[in-house]
Image (cartoon, rainbow, N blue to C red):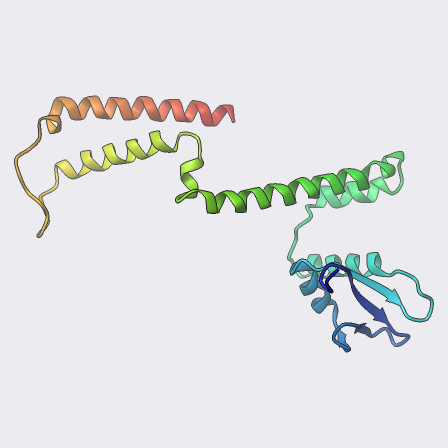
Length: 187
């Protein structure tokens, strides 16, 4: 087992200073928050009593961030947490929160895996190809009335650039847009 696989042991001295046992130096709450953000588990132990103080310090880190305006927890969630300490729901809340955060972590890791799978992450989005075709048709329509810029290829107009086909394309775009809006509203 490597050092990063086991929790980083932080000892709290009687002076309330926090000591990192791996690096043999004193750390702050912000340092501990940094270890956690980097994916490291921490355990904070009172040196004199041997009590595990991890929960107390993690709550303190959260409270400090929330008080600085770095709000992650909406008021209604905080209110529900307070209520859960005084009701029978208390036994369900920890499991629910743990399961919710596990689902969030899994979703984030799957999303990161998928970003490497596709050349364009948007290509996996439902309706992306239709949207791409609409954009191309829209740009073609917009550019058809504009004069050619220097260096642009010029040549005879193609048959499908006629006003009748442009109207058909616009109608198709409108129809596809309406279909996409209907799909989005269902989601």
